[in-house]
Length: 531
Image 1 (tube, rainbow, N blue to C red):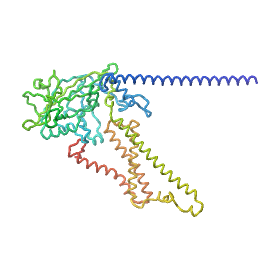
Image 2: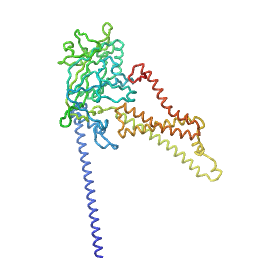
Image 3: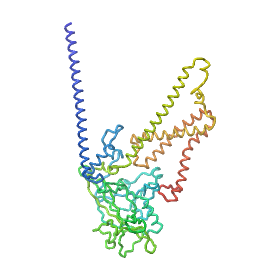
Image 4: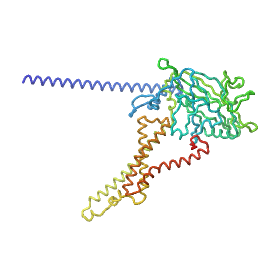
């Protein structure tokens, strides 16, 4: 008995010791977590105060300095999250382009720039860059490493991979260089004036970076550069608005160089500053549309190695015909300046998303829609509950068998709920099957986006994936339509199968053909040629 009591006491003391140790460990872990949480809150508060002081001091968020990059990163801290719960820190390059890797270039390596659509927020008609009266497309072949995969989505959206006429060499500054001389007729002048009036912008890309117009003084950054600008009569002194053309481009390419981490350079920024200037041509015969090579500086006094064109009201290039009503001569030129920066490659997309004015509008629209859905759901549920409660109370009050046999309230329609329709069963089956196909395609598209299988930035590939998912979901639509058609006791199953397959696509193709006719007439870039 004494031995048993001793063993029981030892066990009890051992269990008590384990309990105390476990309690101490849990208390220590809770204290550590609390201190870590407090430390994070303190650091977040200090950083918020620091950023507020930087804003108060007038620090811009669009520059390429370390302070501007830090302020951008702070404002985009909520977007730089990965995972379903958005808890893991990441760069925008990892969020927007999962799996993308940077490109390195050696000094002097030729880097092609590509032109994209000329678009406007005021209209829905984009045009191709080479539809404008500008320098012709270079004939050199695109290297394999810079080629894009052709897909159906890009073709439908009008995106074509064409090289820009400008020459970019890694770390190779280019002083003011003339490109070509173009003669613009009265018809094209009127068209260009319309493009300027509708605020069309030209988009270029270099190393997959869209060209950016930014101003540290005004603290703004906008993709692309305008075709030109419009000056009111109060500015020009004329009776009507005057339109001017941007024919000189100042490119600034920022790069990062870290010999210890990688060889060569990585491009971290691509900016442009457009200039409107009426170049002086001193008795030089220039063939229209021909690329000027090794042009003499004395031939073009406004574009030399030692001088750079600037925007001056006295030298603006006005979009109007000559004195005798002839063609307008336009001399295009450009220059390139390479600037080293400390901005890492992973943060080069921050400036494109900082200060986006559409985010608050989107959040407000989503919350507004959710509130409307909740309100309507509550109203319908209230009506149904009151109606059912009254009917159930009436059923419970029935005393006699004769009263119980009388059908009232919801019992009057219970026999019609699952009764097959007498007419238009084919149309009902086709509509329900098509809806199931569209809904399933929509669900799988969202699922693929959440799993990072689709990249919404690459719109052509995303559209192609959506079309393929819709086609693959045809089996779901066909099954739902066939089941409903069989429930309606219909016999023409071949007709139902064919109608389900072509109903929705025929409507979309018909609308596409009609719209394509109008797009072809106006010469839009999104017009699809069937030749």
